[in-house]
Image (cartoon, rainbow, N blue to C red; front, side, top):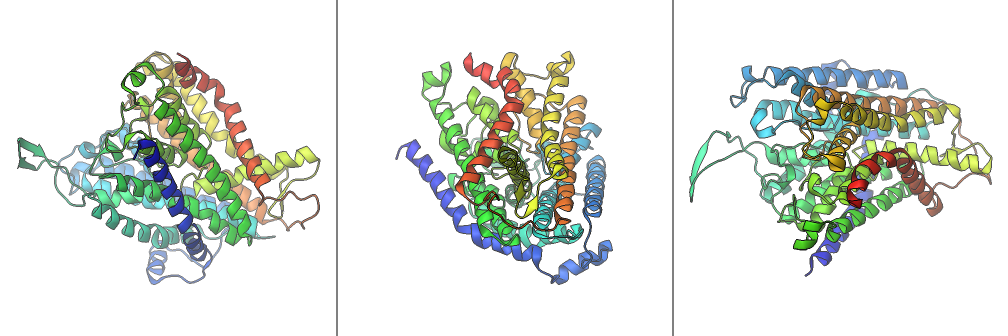
Length: 553
């Protein structure tokens, strides 16, 4: 079988598997977030934190609870790293430097999981399990809670109540992420991933000499990082390491896990608004963008533009030979279309245009299908912008799902969209304007610029992947990228919650002959077009200075 045919079968089986689980998982999450019964374990948690689970919150109260939880999480994770040497299971590692601890704490709390350090030689097991792995769960659950709250804004009428943040957080963790992680960890263990407490200092004699055996709770952390669309990894080589990604079929399963929740949430959305056709329209938009990205990225890498790749017949630099170009391209597209950030090959070594597409995927806002929850609320914001544009074209007040999109609503949507470009372009300009920060670039010229642009795009979109040529483990980059991660996560969330509150307070607008149908292929095409055009208009000048210029050379 040719590698091209193998790649087609690989992608086709992924699409079939995701289609198979879309409805049952989406319906299950609908029952999780709309049910009124609390599990016994959940009641214990509510009592411990002093929460009344049957009390609902207005959007402002919901936002304050979310921000307070996240701020406390950052402080806890920062302290855990700084006190690491005084805690058990530290493996003898020193305290994490202050700027790295800040960057890492913000990174994992914002579901970015950007790593400016080597995991296996910096973090002890306690920090990995009680700090980083916990945030892999709860940061993903926060994103899912925000998405559900925005959906409630569309579904409810003339009310200020949008649910309870603590209930949404606990249910997403206990009922969705934990069960899926348990099953997924068993699958990865069967595929060859490890799950132990072997110290990296223990040594065993093998044929040909001695070799350090690095262990750790890898399987459980690997699956929740994929399910929760978290980047990072126990080993610095990430999902290219055989302990994190053992075989071709674990590679397939990890991509499946990355897409699982984001592609199922539109079904939950459709059920909650009382029209499953709306959910199918959203998943069609996501699927169209995702398939186009996978095809383009894989095609660009298979075409292997460049002198050296053309001479050897493949663009294999930086790629894992176990997976080859098609599977590596698919993984790269999956991880940058979502907020996962895990890699099984090095994006810095991709062809110029292939590397550009990984950046463009993130610049889309990671909405195809995006992160756990973040993809859905990002796509709904783009749908709001699309119906507003369509309303201007026909000269009538735009409506979406029975709610008017007026000046207040479009301002929230516009501010949501503008946050990321502001952070990406400002951060890149500051870095390129300083000779000291330019010294962190391994390469000069367009590729060096691309390394910096990629770093700020990844941080501001809460992705976590990187072009490997940039040395970011410096105080300036750790602080700057940490700020981009924080603002890139929480400012859009506040605007989404404000939009949800504005929508929930409205009375429904009756459907008329002039109402734009938002469940048809026409609307799917409009949203895809608006998404691509908005991103192209915003980032094309920056891309022209980096990967496009490199590709022309």
